[in-house]
Amino acid sequence: MPSEAATRVCFTLRLKPDRVDDYLKAHSTVWPEMLAALRDSGWHDYTLFIDADQALIVGYLVTDNFARAMAAIAGHEVNERWQQGMAEYFDTAGTVDEAIVRLTEYFHLD
Image (tube, rainbow, N blue to C red; front, side, top):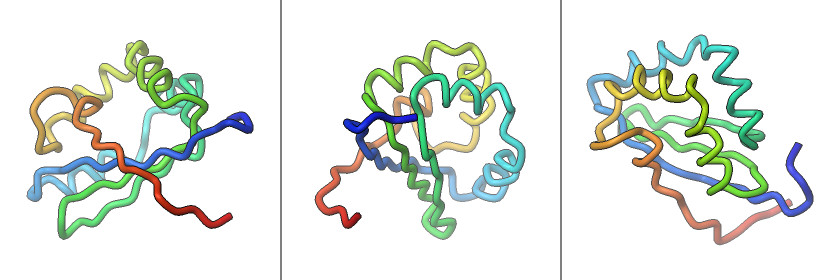
């Protein structure tokens, strides 16, 4: 569970336009060990949204420290396997984790 000092993080990723449906199908069953690795790495309230027409993913999570959470998930072997499987869907060079574009929060209403 995130602490009082938890931070909301929002990011984007780009899919290959012709692979959107395949990407969504691949997420119909996320491996239980991948879900556990995310939780263990400090990812909470993690949600993914998609604008399929733009092949744009918007991710949201809450964490105590995003850099630490990213480093922790990168250290899980299951994440490496998951990212290798997902790489074919993304319009990016390098790993999917490296392609994350973090957005700046500028307004929040509780």
